[in-house]
Amino acid sequence: MISPVFALIFGVLVSQPAFGLPSKITDVDDWCVVTEFDEVAKAVKNCTNIILDSVQVPGGETLKLHLNEGTQLIFRGEIVFGYAVWAGPLVEINGTNVYIEGEGAVLNGQGELYWDGKGEWGSLKPKFFTLQLHNSVMTFINVLNSPVHCVQLADSTDVELSFWTIDNWAGMPEVAGADKCGHNTDGFDIWNGTNIRLTTNMVFNQDDCVAIRCGNNIFVDQMSCFGGHGLSISVGFSNESVQQNTLSNVIVSDSVIQNGENGIHIKTHVDGGLGSITNVTYKNILIREVTKYGINVQQNYRNQPANSSQPSDAKNNIPITNLTFDNIFGLVQESAVPIYINCAEDGCFDWTFNDVNVTGTKSNNCNFQPAGFTC
Ligand SMILES: *[C@@H]1O[C@H](CO)[C@@H](O)[C@H](O)[C@H]1NC(C)=O
Ligand SMILES: *[C@@H]1O[C@H](CO)[C@@H](O)[C@H](O)[C@H]1NC(C)=O
Ligand SMILES: *[C@@H]1O[C@H](CO)[C@@H](O)[C@H](O)[C@H]1NC(C)=O
Ligand SMILES: *[C@@H]1O[C@H](CO)[C@@H](O)[C@H](O)[C@H]1NC(C)=O
Ligand SMILES: *[C@@H]1O[C@H](CO)[C@@H](O)[C@H](O)[C@H]1NC(C)=O
Ligand SMILES: *[C@@H]1O[C@H](CO)[C@@H](O)[C@H](O)[C@H]1NC(C)=O
Ligand SMILES: *[C@@H]1O[C@H](CO)[C@@H](O)[C@H](O)[C@H]1NC(C)=O
Ligand SMILES: *[C@@H]1O[C@H](CO)[C@@H](O)[C@H](O)[C@H]1NC(C)=O
Image (cartoon, rainbow, N blue to C red; front, side):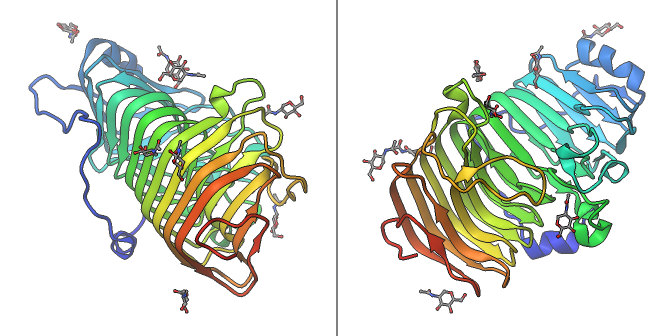
């Protein structure tokens, strides 16, 4: 796992829970303690206070946790997921009013056995977590070596994910080599979420640190992102559903993004259907040492294999309205464009940038000028 030195470098701050959620584990007498994978299903069915201690999950099996309402779940020890060529997920959690906490546990996906530098475009790899939660908290979760995407939080309301460490350090190209590195190892992907808060999480990976896809009222703060592709918004995954291509009321704040490709990345997909992005604020963000873009807002995005070039024509199928950047500082590597904005015609409206200073060697490249900022 990551040495505590990094935690000190990034400096985590303690913050308040949101939305009046369940606030901590309550001690009770009747914990169901599970140490064998075969006992999980019964405990999940029968108990509301569960400890999963050092369970070894066989390859090709999902640790399925469809929890009773109000369940408290604790992870302990090292939980290892056996290798198998399959799509996963390794863990599926559904719950309402649940509180899930890691007590020093490590969930080890053994990504190093899968990584081939190609992510979802290479051999089949299991996704790690699929979560569908309501009025719930999941906290102090340590994840090691995610084969591909780590967290998919979907169709959820009033959720807080806090104090996670997603450690895909071993999958960095510099560490693993280009042919054995992780790719598409997104930290947190949020699909159709309402009142979601990600706070005080640390991610070392090889794709988006966070990727918000659709939903309303989404708050991301005190993230420390290392090596990935940015604090991202990625909208347009659906060809048919306007709802699935609609994102509104987002605040991303008080975070640091270091190394990796991009700092802030907002992308609308040219091959998706109609939708919109409205009322998004990024504030108090520090970007350091990224290699491609400090800030990249592009309406010409297409999800493609590593190293592909993007289509040249931007499209306005998903207009970006009321985008605010406030107090964004950064210094990028020589290879990177500090600020890149590629809007389609009639694609971008009412943007305001205050105190945005991202510098590097290359020039900025913008075809749209936000108020308060000269590109
Ligand atoms: C769990 O099962 C035991 C019997 O095996 C039963 O006594 C107990 O009430 C059950 N607990 C719950 C929460 O269903
Ligand atoms: C992507 O480009 C890098 C640098 O040129 C190379 O090392 C790597 O193998 C390429 N990855 C893929 C999947 O083609
Ligand atoms: C559990 O959540 C998954 C997605 O995470 C969803 O596909 C499934 O339908 C849910 N199951 C139940 C019983 O809610
Ligand atoms: C979004 O999630 C809500 C539950 O929070 C669900 O009722 C709704 O059907 C979902 N929408 C789509 C398009 O899946
Ligand atoms: C939408 O449909 C087009 C044409 O059928 C296809 O090329 C594209 O991949 C689809 N996009 C998505 C996001 O499913
Ligand atoms: C913009 O989003 C924030 C965060 O959800 C919210 O507090 C604010 O009211 C929204 N503004 C408008 C005009 O909807
Ligand atoms: C967009 O911003 C304008 C002012 O710049 C404000 O009047 C409007 O309420 C905002 N709308 C949303 C949906 O945020
Ligand atoms: C922007 O930051 C650079 C250092 O990264 C500094 O030299 C410059 O003065 C700053 N500009 C403004 C307007 O603050």
